[in-house]
Image (cartoon, rainbow, N blue to C red; front, side, top):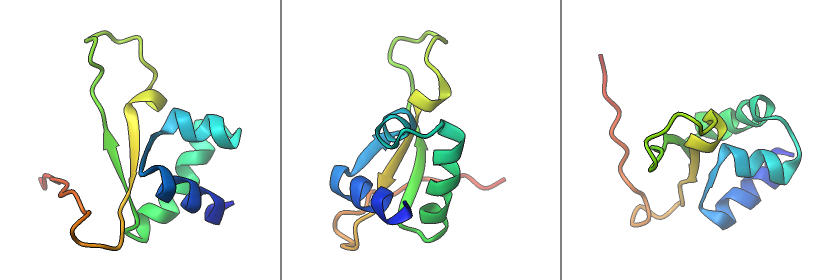
Length: 84
């Protein structure tokens, strides 16, 4: 299933956790565990999106976004990671 997730996400480019969970018919926690493989490999980054409506009704799976990082350095979007 990891390869299927890789192919789907690399084709789409960016997906929410909710979209991925729904597409593959798995619960969000299981999908996060599978995606963590690709995060560790440096192929995917996990980002948080903000709710544009400013409410708290959005579930966390709708606010977590996964972005596939292409192999071309021209396609990479820098991600700021603050260190404490």
